[in-house]
Length: 350
Image 1 (cartoon, rainbow, N blue to C red):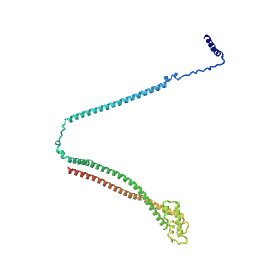
Image 2 (cartoon, rainbow, N blue to C red; image 1 turned 180 degrees about the horizontal axis):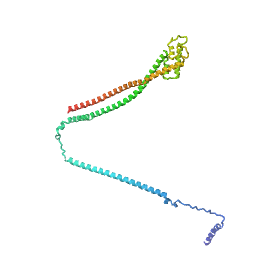
Image 3 (cartoon, rainbow, N blue to C red; image 1 turned 90 degrees about the vertical axis):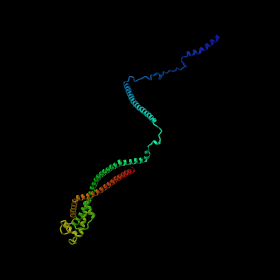
Image 4 (tube, one colour; image 1 turned 135 degrees about the horizontal axis):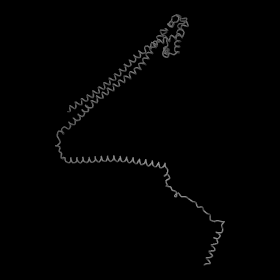
């Protein structure tokens, strides 16, 4: 046994000796151990702003505002609680008073006799029930009509009269302004027609011409342009040459007499006497005379036309006011008649 044991020891020691003495070949690789720092080792909940003055100021302001708001909230709650308590006290008092009244009424009604016969009711009430109802209804109607409708009708009539008077004053002012404008326009048109008539007669008498172009004369009178004067003078000059030439006897036509009006010589054939410029000058003089004569009558014509239009408008306004007055009076009379009829009916039923 010992021999066997020794053999085992020798056999096992041999490889150990080999491993120990062979230092060049390493069969086991060394591993590096890492040093890890865990999060649980850090102080996470340690305050870091305890010594910061700004943070202390912010915290102080927050605490102050919060306490102030809580204080205001408590004051409001106290006030609301006080109001609620007062209301509850009032309700309790009302309930107590109501209970007392009900108890007193029950006590009083219990003391009354419940055996009431039809004979206990007065006979006059049963007999006059219908009459009393009719009388009361008629009396109410009469009171309403006499005490409310009649004064209200008078008041409404006065209001209507006042409104009608104000409308009449305003309408007259508006009518006068409109009459002035219409009278001025109509008067100017009438004066213009009068001036044109004077101009037409002046042309006929000044130049002794019966055949005149009305459109051309109106253009000369209204527009007064140089080209219109030239056209009119040329037209008269053409008529003069056709009727008062050298071969025509002197003063054989009325056209030949316009030379005297223009202060020319008696001979109609002279060139200096009857040129277009001289005729245009004569037309301008006649036109100026007609315009001045019409201008003198402008104010009188406008005044007369304005007065006529104003009188017409005033008459229309007066007629309208009279119709309104009649309607108001008729309404008041109708209301008074209705009131009188109701009073008579009440007296008859009474």
